[in-house]
Length: 158
Image 1 (cartoon, rainbow, N blue to C red):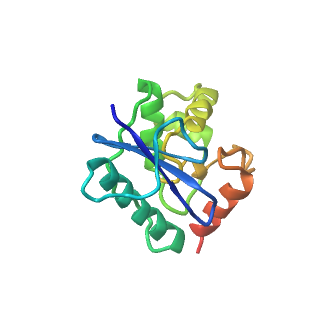
Image 2: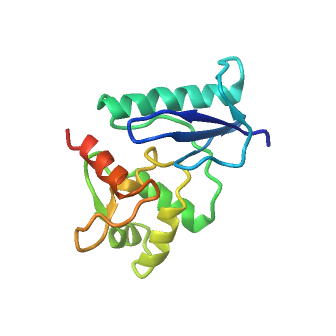
Image 3: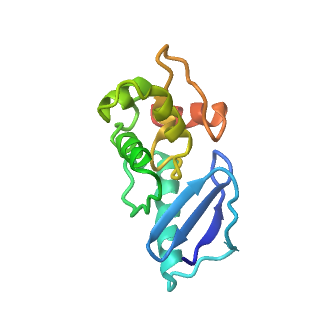
């Protein structure tokens, strides 16, 4: 599989978008071990996925987009994919606890496993793992850092 990576500047810091011919492979806070490109060519299929994602992420950051419409190419375990699907269903501007996701996937005792899968979400922001908080209402952790998580939640409260 031929993957490329593009660094997008965002108000929350750099985002690293990775795509292949099959679709977007991930949106990450850290650079991945994949070939980087500085310019996107709309004639290349991989670049088309990234161009679409960049456009929608920019709209998200300006508050004009509440849902993403991007083909995501998930490559995780069956359990992780169930968690990521449940994360995708959290409405814009709302938060849920890890235990709520565990109940939603019909595995109420898997709260810690849900947290682990949440932390391995390959599509930050697009699959909104930032909307998951601790049961006591505290903000919890986040791969992009707590300040970024707060920033994303504030964007969704505008």
